[in-house]
Picture 1 (tube, rainbow, N blue to C red):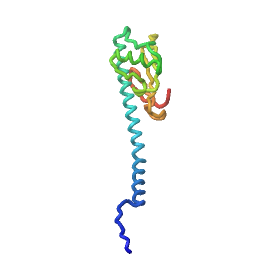
Picture 2 (tube, helix red, strand yellow):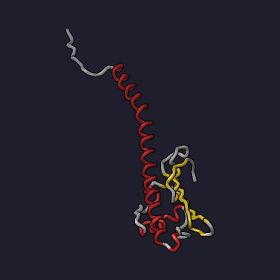
Picture 3 (cartoon, rainbow, N blue to C red):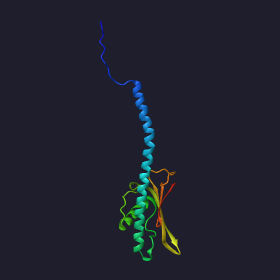
Picture 4 (cartoon, rainbow, N blue to C red):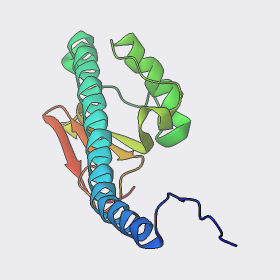
Amino acid sequence: MLIKRKDFRGFTLVELMIVVAIVGILAMVAVPNFVRYRTRAIVATATGTGEAIRSAMAMYATSSEGNLFPVGLWADGEAGWPALRSFMAVNGTTMKENMREQGFQNFIYQPLEVRGELGSDYFFIFQTTGVLATQPGSLIEVRPSGVNRWTGTL
């Protein structure tokens, strides 16, 4: 009796292991690049929001008596977000309802006194969501002079 052997086609274990190794090497290269680009995008978005806030603050100051920035209109952090958002909307900047949707997990606002005038200067510091504390852009500082990116946490 002769047994007829069918011609089976498929991949050998060695071929499959080579393909898995190649995919693993590609993943090792691609994942860090993806994370880096994602972080850059988050920081760029937060910086753009900072520029919009800076513009709204300038608009407020130009229409206020004495060209002063706001003092005591909102609290810091999550509790102050709705009031800050309303303030920004009145001054030409639309912000998302939720602080985290906007890309921030915390913020502080400090009006500064210059030559006896409280509100002559200010600074915001926003903590960016999804950026490690060791990376520039984890903190976004907004001042009348510009927007800066720092490392750290609030």
